[in-house]
Image (cartoon, rainbow, N blue to C red):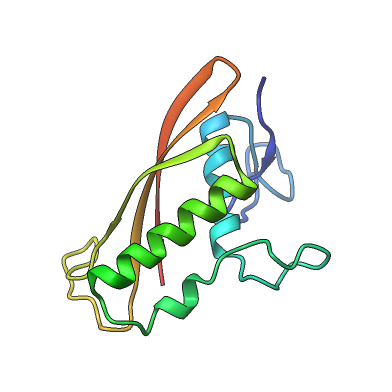
Length: 132
């Protein structure tokens, strides 16, 4: 069974001249769904006010193990509630340097999430990075 949804971040599909590019690969579909869930603030979605996370509140929190464990718990709880096909396996944080080796400021949050998803007998894994 293939998943089919709009690709995130939003972009045009220049090959087919469509307004929005779509995911037709299951891994891309689950990655887009996961990113959209995690970047939606709680209370932002009408008729579903509990949908989303409060990740932005952690941007100005100290970069320590307590903050990391709170973020990881919130991520796992939210994903298990809204996308039960996905299981988050590891959540890591880059408190020191970004992808280019530049130092990260105290009010920046870089989260790397590895996940496994299962759809019927199909099982695969993926990885996303979220930067605030």
